[in-house]
Each structure stands twice: as C-alpha cells, then as structure tokens.
Image (tube, rainbow, N blue to C red):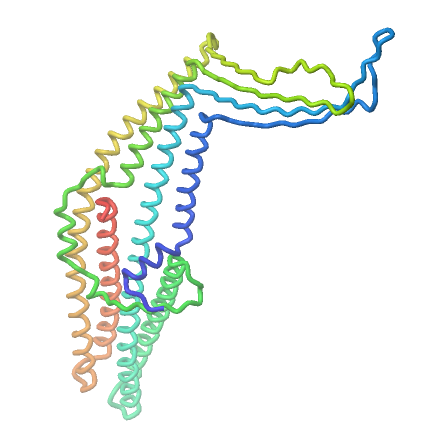
Length: 403
C-alpha cells in the first residue's frame, strides 16, 4: 500500500485498534449516563401466578368451603427521586465528556505516532541508501588497493585498513536496515494492518520538513483551554465537586411513589372471596436523621479531595505554561541543530568523495580514507538524531497547543 503522511494518519484513525477501544469507551460512557437517567424514571413490572389446592376444602363445622384454583395478575409502577440521583446523572455526564476528550487525545497521539514513524522510516531509508552508495565506493577502492598491493605500489596494511572500514560500513548498513524494519513493523501496528503488508511511503523528508511552520509554532499563543490534558483536569475538578455534592445530598430526603394494579380470577364453579384491592397508590418520604457522624465525616473527606483538586489544577496551569516555554526553546534549538547537521553531512560527504578521488591517484593515504569514512558514518548518525529531535520537538509543541 502506498501512503502519504496524511493518508497514513487518516488510515490509522479508521483502523487503529487502540483508537477503536477509545471509541468503545465513549459508547460505554453514554450507556452509563442513560443508566443513571433511567434510575429517576418510572420502573414498571408485572407479575402473574396460578395457585391450585388440588380439591382441598376448608371445613367450618357443618359448612365446607371449597378452595378453588385461582390466578392473579399484578402490575406495579414505581418511581424514586432524590438529590443524590440528580448529582449521579451530572457525574455520569462529566464521565461522558471525559471519554470524549480521551478519544480526541488518543486520535492526536495516534496521528503523532504515525508522523514520527513516517519520518523515522524516511530517514532510515535515506541512511541505508547513502551507506550503500559509500559501500560500493569503498569496495572499488578496496579492489584497487588489493591490485596495488600485488604490484608493490601499496602496502598490505592499506588494504587491511580498508577491509576494516568495509566491515564497519556493512555493520552500520545491517543495523540501519534492522532499525528500518522495526520502524515499519511499528507503523503497521499503528495502521492496524497485517504484519506482512508492504508499505511504500510516497513523500520524502524535504517535502515534509517546513522550518517556517516550525518557527510559527514558537510564536503561537498558548491557550490553556485548548490543551486536552488541561480539559481533562478541569473535568476531574468538576467531578470532584459533584462528588462533594453527592455526599451532601446523601443526608437529604428521598421521595418515592408507586401505583399497583391487581386482578384475581377463580377457576371453578364457586367464586372465592377476593379481598385484594384492584388499585393502590402510595407515596413515601424518607429522611435520614442520625448516622453517628459517619456521613458528616464523608462530606468532610470529599471537601478535602475537592480542595486538593483545586490546588492540583492551579499547579498544573503553571506547569503547562512553563512547559510551553521549554518546548519552544527545545524546538528552536532543534531547528538550529538540524540545520547544522544537515550542512555537516553534506560537507562530510564531499570530503569523503574528495579523499576517495585523491586516494585513487595516490595523493591520500588509506588512513585518511578510513578516517573520512568513519566521519561520514558519524555525521550520518548525528544527522538522523538531529532530525528526529526536530520532529519530536515539533510534535511535543503541537500536542501542547492542540494543533
């Protein structure tokens, strides 16, 4: 499958299994909310039964009263209402909003992980390609050196040094290729595709990197309410407040009402005596009077939890503002480092090519060539690290700003 970065992110949003579970959690929270609402709505139940005394007769002196079979049908409608139930509905609504925010956070994290893996794969492919080109060049130089040793114009140590350099470069290529496959496996996992699915990335690093967009992030205003973590924290604070209210309402009255309909039918030649009223209505009010200070202490504990949550919220606000400043510094530094390492790898590659050409005509020693090859591998590693630091710094700031 061929994917641009945007296509890969969209595909992950539709197929990522972690994201699917987050969507299920939203549906689950909706069901829990309506479960709380339903507790305040009328509850209706019906009951039917049949009784047979198997011909038994009740004797009162000279009079026998037959116990005929009979059946009853009853329908009961009841409803209970209290302040605690209202608060429970409000709490379930908060839980539903928190699930929605968590889903959005998971979507953002999924897109960011796909972006990181996409960049990583491109960088590793570029690394392997560069190392393979240099390996081919080193092979030619080694072949040339071996022939020079045979005719006596070069020493065996020169060939040995190049052979070590070849082995080092092959090891680097193998390590990079292994890392590349691991990156693709992680990308397959994020996309929710089979492990054997071949993925082709249709964009390159130059298409995706945008220094101007990165600098624009640094100057963008940080709005706390746009941050998903802060949104969750606010909902947690609201939840703590509602839990305090729930404890307070546990000492409040509870109103309940019911209606009962009952019908009784006898099966036999003699009609029995029916003392069951067909309709009944009842209302009751329950008020807690004394709980040995248990509920009062529960209210105090909930109040302390709410105060702690308010303190945590204030501390998090300050921490997020500090984090914003630090992430801006990190991104600016990463941009400068990336620019430096990009120039460094270009210069190191040209130095390696220049020394290779000189070596072929005898104007450079094998040690110079070996050092140039080592410097090139080191520069490539530094470039990869700088690029990934830039990507991670940009993603971290985008997450904070909810971009």
